[in-house]
Length: 418
Ligand code: AMP
Ligand code: MG
Image (cartoon, rainbow, N blue to C red):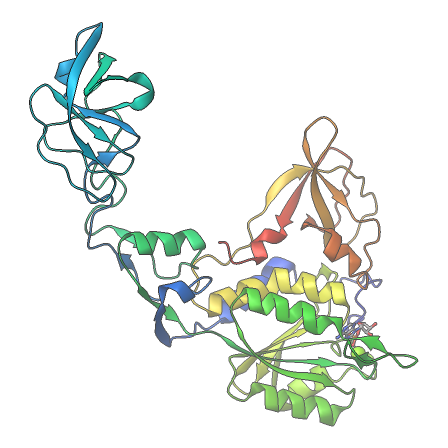
């Protein structure tokens, strides 16, 4: 059996590769099927449960792309200046009348193009004498006109089932007049935090205690995913307390998540309780930090047991829990997007586990985007996660020299924006 410790032990014996672990999790992530119809204004970050089609065209009418004059381009075909009478004035929200021959219409951005006009001349290119507009041609037919339906045609699918709704998606739905959307219901997640040493902020620490920082990290991360949280708080290090909390948390929830107690120490009861109440399906991943990350089921409720170390909680959430929860919520896109960027550091110690280093994407003195590491990469150094704006992935047994491209996962991937 591999050692359960998170930071130091490098034995690879029966460790599960990160990709294998993620595939297993995603394969087992049953999607919540219930849906609800909610107000568009409340739908940010929710997962769409049906395709959204437009029943109107956008824009609804040909309209002016700028402040200027709506003209018949034929009047301005000759080189040199042409003078035309200004026969009407059309503001956004109004509809003009057919353009009289040899006349132009004063028009403002967004106002419908009057019948007979086929171009708009921007006001900067026009002079006005009394009630006449003077400008020079030639003018291209269609210049400065936004065509009806050029963004969205009637019947277009504008959003798809499984889209995680971004602010701009809400705007898009609003632009076709939709005010309610059908989304998957929120995932109910039961959480608790094991450890006799834990205390909540707001109460002074007694000797030997530490604050329950994992609670705040985990809740923030779950909030970002719009989860409904059932928080059982701190649970002591006994088998009975762990077992009771597990059964309680699994009631009426879609997922239970915990921190701590997943190693092989005598005070680590999660694995034993899980095996009593359900089944352990995955334990010991080839990842640093986060090796003791655990997956299983409490009766029929899935369970993700994260290690106690605060950085391990954050990293394993990013790598495993985030895509897993998105999949359960019905999202199409679950993968963390990453990109390659030159390292501004040397990483010369070969490590048999896949490492997720706290890193910051920066611009160096030559204006090049590079990625730097926080100097202390211990799994208890929560400062590193706060300082960083992403994770650098170092595959097993790889060394990195300054300038080598490395994979970078920005923390923006964890927010409600994709
Ligand atoms: P464990 O996995 O329970 O052995 O915990 C590993 C390390 O993480 C220990 O140093 C714990 O004190 C620490 N730890 C466990 N739970 C928390 C928590 N909720 N908040 C902060 N640190 C924790
Ligand atoms: Mg513990």
